[in-house]
Amino acid sequence: VYGPDARSEPQGWIHNLEHGALVLLYSCDKGACDEAHLEELRQFSRGFPASAICGINPGVVGPVVARFEQMPTRYAALVWGRALYMDELDEQRAYDFYTRYGERLSAEGRWIAPPEPQCPAPTPVPSPTPAPTSG
Image (tube, rainbow, N blue to C red; front, side):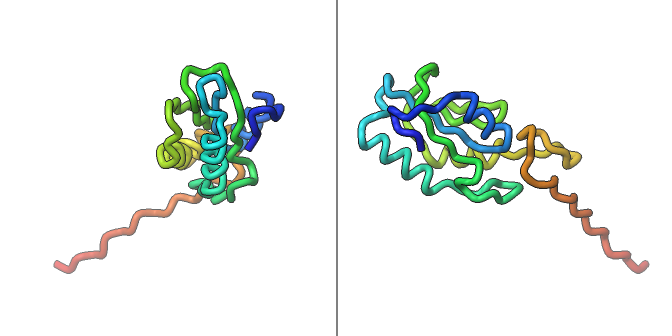
């Protein structure tokens, strides 16, 4: 969690996005920098889930929480190729966004996102074959 005065460059957190992290941005200009909002951001980081496919624990590649002013809302949750803009921090919505879009596979089981996955794609499990019927 980068505080309002900490230096965090987009190039740094873009690298985390490439590896499957969630980046949560907040805007001081839009009112997210008082102590109550900053504590809410710290709580968000502490309660973060493991990644959906690789099971990467929080703190390894994300979440990254950083100040960023060039956005239309007070908060933005980012994963590779997607953004969720929020006027209020909705932790559950951000967690759901991450687990749905942070790591994604195609129907064929190939990686869609992130561009640099942190684990091999799971091997598809064959469907059970129906038991033969006697007739």
